[in-house]
Image (cartoon, rainbow, N blue to C red):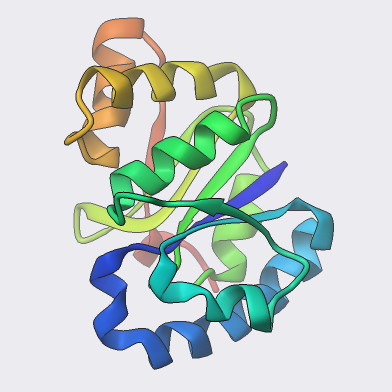
Length: 165
């Protein structure tokens, strides 16, 4: 299982907070997934990530959008189960534990909006990539709905407020 952290242009305005949150998230990721499984799709504005976390494998997010960062990361990691994490969101232990409980896609929500964490099993990664290729402006919620509608792939959406922890 690989972790894909997404850094994008909209996060630049809170750069110091994001880098501080990254320290906290990095400890959680390393504890549960190990150091060899962490990838980050970054823009040129977040080169500090490379300096602060030299063990993370970097993927260039040339367009600087969250969608393009997800797309590029999934293309790189298409042979693995992938946990997508918006670098601006905190990774909670309850979310990590839920990911390990199933082998179907999960999208985590907060108040019916994407919280910033999604799990895509290897067998569905190809279809998510195709979804982004067909409509690059599609957000991840639309990509997951596309999976269900076009490919018949079911996923589970979980509100993080209902998780313990």
